[in-house]
Image (cartoon, rainbow, N blue to C red):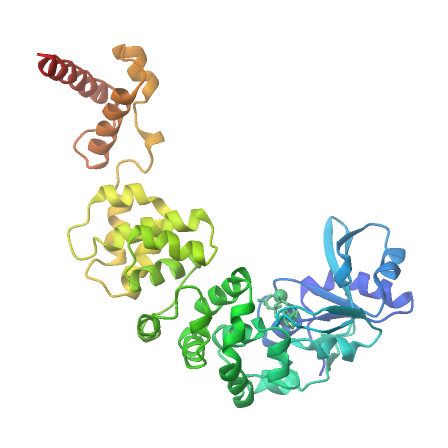
Length: 411
Ligand code: ATP
Ligand code: MG
């Protein structure tokens, strides 16, 4: 097969491949970017593979960085861009079900393609646009099939993450998993236990953001891979519930985690430990709790303060989830409430702590913070105009009330 139109991302890297070839070696584009080019999808990362050994690559190019030299990867710097060039290699050993004991550099493209996970990921693209297809990856792309390269059981024994990658691609590309490959996952799902959560997480999120999430989730459940993911083992029914949502189209990682936390009915404390187990960032954990605070209000009157405190990102995610979950409060209504908030952030309040210190002669401390919080709340709720004179007058009022009440207490 010949790729008619080589994507721009490849065009800019072509001179590098030609330079390697001029030095007497082979060089190809490989991996996901070749797959995506043939599918007409956008390319994320350009991977280049070569028969030249790392030292030979370093001799060809002036500016290089040893980004992963032990695995054969050297980054070549060219016009401000960095390109990762990896020597063809074979892998062997895999005693721990996740990484090879031994990596060996080789001169043969076929050997390199053979160690890749799926046939659709084992294609190479030559600089002239010819696709090199040694494992019928093109047929599988044509027939929308996910198939392991070679014996699936062996391949999953080598690296158990490949099972997650398989179900991820079933969702992401809307492809069917070939029966023997599926069977091998069912038989070996428990090996996923050996894999670092961070690696599983990447595939899990890509699965949830895919084109056919229901298909990916069904495979994830049917093969029992879910049993070996953090805090999923006892939650099959809840995961099935997600697969049944009619309008399941998630926009980002935050929406994925918030939906899971909602369907699992987690308390804020449980949300933190759930997301910790999945090793997400603290930022995501906080945002998920903000989304849940909004979703909790979906059956009552929405308190504008909740979306004020949740802020824009969580509010947007919540509005999307309200529609996916078909809750009484609509996403549009939530966004309307958020947009109508007189201020979106404390920094927008027409009065700040300094003003209070200077004008009212208040002292720094919790009392000052309390007054500011009250003013902020009243402005958000539309009970006070966000106007400095109005707010100062109100603060003055609060100050004397506070003084009077403390006087009363002392008495
Ligand atoms: P994406 O589009 O999400 O980046 P990808 O297939 O390009 O998907 P990468 O992690 O970028 O995934 O890997 C690049 C290539 O390296 C893959 O296409 C595949 O050929 C090979 N590869 C990646 N992970 C594995 C693995 N666990 N086992 C075998 N080969 C792998
Ligand atoms: Mg990639």
